[in-house]
Length: 157
Image 1 (cartoon, rainbow, N blue to C red):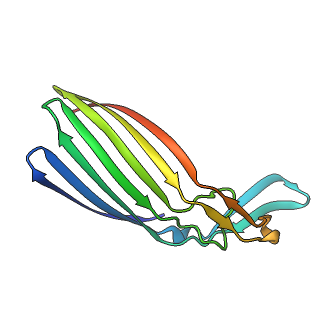
Image 2: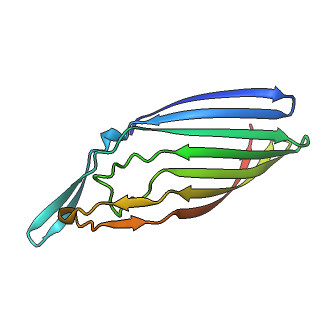
Image 3: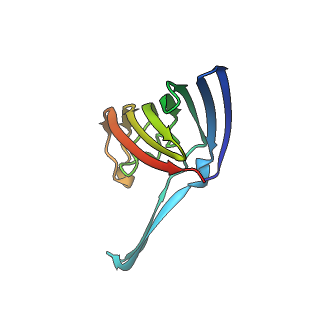
C-alpha cells in the first residue's frame, strides 16, 4: 500500500535529539486476497477473501542522547492503529492496535557504528463476531506480546 510520512527532528539541548513521525498508510488498496490452487480443491481453482482494510495513521517519537563522543542512547515509542475492520478480521492477521516500546544504543568509532536495540510490542485484545460463512466463530484474541532484538553494523564512506 501507499505510505505518506511526515517527520520533524529538533535538538532542544546540545546532546539531545528528538524526532516525531506520523505515517499514513492507504490500506484500503488491500480490498481482497485471492489464493489460486494449481490442482483445485473440491472443484475450486481459487478462493477470494474480501478484506476492505481501512487507511490508518501510525505515530512514533524517539529520543537520542549523546552520552559520550562514542556512545548514543536511544528510546522510542510507537502507536500503530490497526487497519483491519471488525467485519473482516480473521486468523491470518489477528492483530489490533499495538504499542511499541524501544530502547537501544549505538557505538561510533571512525567510520564505523554498531547498533543494538530492543523493542517490546504490546497488542490489544481483539474480539471476533461470528461469521460462519467465513469460517470465523465468535472468539477473542487475548493481548499479544512480542520481543524484538536488532543488531546492525554500519560504515560511512
